[in-house]
Image (cartoon, rainbow, N blue to C red; front, side):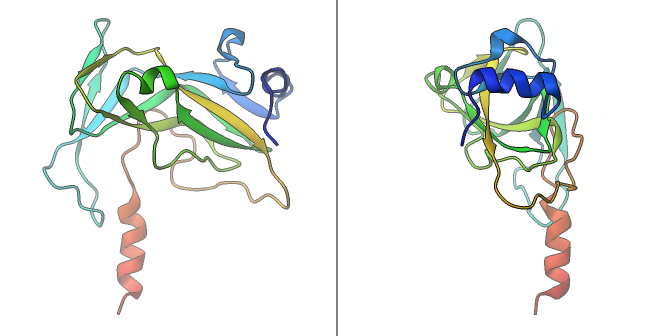
Amino acid sequence: MILTGPEITQAAHDGRLTIDPFEAGQVNPNSYNVRLGPTLLTYTTPVIDAHEANPTCAVEIGPGGYVLQPGELYLGHTLEQVGSNTFVPLLFGRSSVGRLGLFVEITAPIGDIGFHGQWTLMLSPIRPLRVYAGMKVGQIMFFVSSGDIDLYEGKYQAARGPQPSRYWRDAARIRAVAP
């Protein structure tokens, strides 16, 4: 079951979910619009290694925006801090942004119950595209869960700003048990 816009508003007001800052004008019939935060990260090496911590470069999006380039992966973040100990959040790019040729959050749209923070967004343009901090870039939906709940306590909890992959931490454990 998906929450309707009025139920998202009620749940944000009664504490069943967190959206900070919350703005009533961002509520849709069954989702909430999230905006692009001011910081982008890019990886700085020509090869990204899944078994290593990869260096990144941070870029602040100025008032004139920032032009994303095809073939580059940008890690952005939501301006809003979003989370719930009750509902399962799913985040997708807005169709109006997709129509500009920007892929947003294609591979990891599901959030964990208990995560609270800014969401890291994977941004990939198919053509050069100027983006702006504060633009509506995604929409988040909330689903009712069924069964016992184990709250998220993972490595990205309470994230602020874009977070690079920490997969290498898991890879180290995998290498330790691999034959």
